[in-house]
Structure formats: C-alpha cells, structure tokens
Length: 227
Image: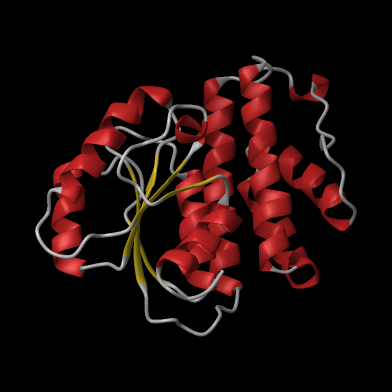
C-alpha cells in the first residue's frame, strides 16, 4: 500500500464550507475508515444540505480519488476501497434527505453491460429521486437482455444509461439500438459518463448529460416538466 502520509489531501478547488469537510472526508476514505467518513457526513449534512454534500463533498472527493489513481499515487485497491466508502456515503445522504414532491415520472437508471463504475450512475439516480422523479436504479454491469426485460416490466418514462470506460461504448450503442427496436412508444434515452463525454456522439439518444444537474434538467425537459 502506498504511503498515505506523503499524499497532499487538500482539495484542488477550495470552495468555502465544503472545502475543509471534503479534505477530512478524503483522508478518511484513503485510510479506509468507513465509520469516520460516515460520521463526518452525518454530522455536517444538516448544515450543508443534501445537494452540497453530494456534489461538493462526496463527488469532488471521488474525483480527487480518480486523479490520485491516474497519477499512480494510490493503488487500484485503495481506489476501490475509497469508492466503496463514497457509495455508502451517498446512500446515507439519500436516506436522510427530503425529496421534492413526486412528479409522476418513472426513470430507469443503469450502467451498461460490462460497466463496473456505478458511482456516477448512483449519484444521478439519487439526485433524480430527490428532485421528484420515481427512480429504479439497476446498478453496475446490467446485461442488455436484463435491461430490456425491466423496460418491458416497468414501462418507464425515461431511460438513463451510464458508460464510464471507453471500451464499454459498444455495449452502450448496442443497448440503445436494441431499445430502439422495441415495439410501442419511443422511449426517451439519456446517456452520461466519461466515455460518452469524450467520444463521438451516440446515435438515437435524446441527450447527453455532463453531470447530474444537467441530467435533471434534460429529464424535466424531455418529459414536459419544464427546465
């Protein structure tokens, strides 16, 4: 394991109240201290609010984890350990947050077949639900056949697909193609994830979200709920 004492855990983009908390949370992540990380989130959730906790603390800390891994300053095992903590932290914020009144629209959120990086999709699913959507989150690595079955069972108003790694883009394009071949009304599809944002556009989708805020805005627009 790489020496954590040599890492600079200060945030890259300090932004007031969230900055100090993010640094402490990141330190707990890198040490694998789940209890401390969740305590920090619980203690400060009321002061910061759910959105700031999700975006300015947990998401930004997770981006820092990715940067440290890309620079080979932490191991893949440390990255996985930190990500697991962030998934727990997101679940805790989601549990304790108050959702907006329901808007009656069902959204299905999933990572495409082979895609194991579920954190971005989980964040989108949580924020959509807190914004008033009824959400079903299928998690990581959803086989396309299973995705089609869920669409048939649930008849969602919108499908949101996540693809983080470029080598899973064929799975994304195959999923979109097979959804478009389904009988019945055309299902709106949104896509997101690093692979989508850095590649050529995906055909036959209704929008690409750069982040969870944009996914909420696009979802509202597509379903006639305003922007």
